[in-house]
Length: 173
Figure (cartoon, rainbow, N blue to C red):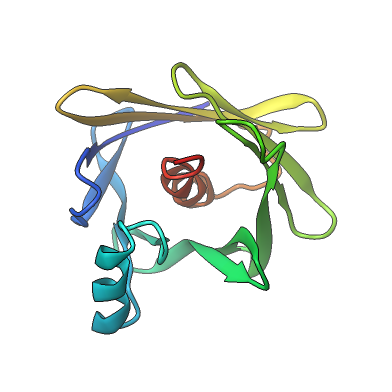
C-alpha cells in the first residue's frame, strides 16, 4: 500500500501549487487548480469558485499524469478525469445525488469504481466490492489530506486518485 499526504488551503480562492509527499517524505507529485484563461478565472470568482473546477496533477519532472475537471452540459453536471499514463478518459458522475454528500461512480465504459464520500473519516474507492484506495481530509488551519492506494488497484496511477479527490472536496457544496 502506498501512502501520500499533502496540505490544501481552506480558502477556496487560493490556488497554490501543492506538493504531494510519499511515506518517505519525498515529493512525488505536484498539482494545481487550472484555468484555461483569465476570463474563466474571473468568472469562477463571481460564481463562488465552484463552476470551473479543474485540477492537473504532475510528476516531479512536470509531466502531466492526470486531470479531473467539472463539466456542465445540458443541465447535467459530472466530472471527466483523464489518466495520461493509460491514455484513458473516465466519467465521474453522481450516485444518489439528492443526498447531502453524494457518492460518485467512476467509469471508463468497462471499469467501474465507486467512491463512497464521507465528510468526516475516510472516503473509500471500491472496485468489485474491494477497497482499492481511501482518502481523508482533516480540517485544521488547512486541509490535511491523507491518501492510501492499495497495490491491487486496477488504476495504477496515484495521480488519478489525487485529481478525483481534489474535485471531490467541492462535491456536495
